Length: 144
Image (tube, rainbow, N blue to C red; front, side, top):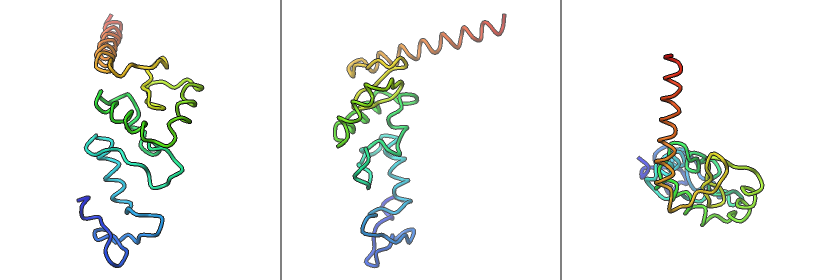
C-alpha cells in the first residue's frame, strides 16, 4: 500500500491524489503509514520533513519505555544519535526530571535514572516482575 503512494508527472500522489508542494515530499497517507511502521520497528526511524524539529517529534510511542521492548529502545537511541538536536535534548533531559522515556539518546527509568543499554533486558525482566508482584498484592488485598 505504501508503495502506491508516489509522485506522478502531474505532481500528485498516484494513490490518493494529494498535490505535492516544494516543501512537502510525502502525502499525508504515506506519512501515517511510515509513522506506524517506524513505531513497530518495521522500518528505520526517519527525520521529519521539517528540519527544525527532532526525530522524535510526532512519534512519542517510539521513545516511550512503556509497551516497548529492548530492540525498540535501541532503535530509538540509535535514531537519537543521528538527530541534529541530540545535545539540546540531552541537556533538557538532565535539567528536567524525565521518567520512563528515551531522551537525548538515554533511556530513563521511572525514577529518572539512566538505564545502561547493556542492561535493557534485565531492566525489563525486573520491571515486569515487580509489576506482577504489585498486581498480585493488590488482588490479594481486595480479596481479603
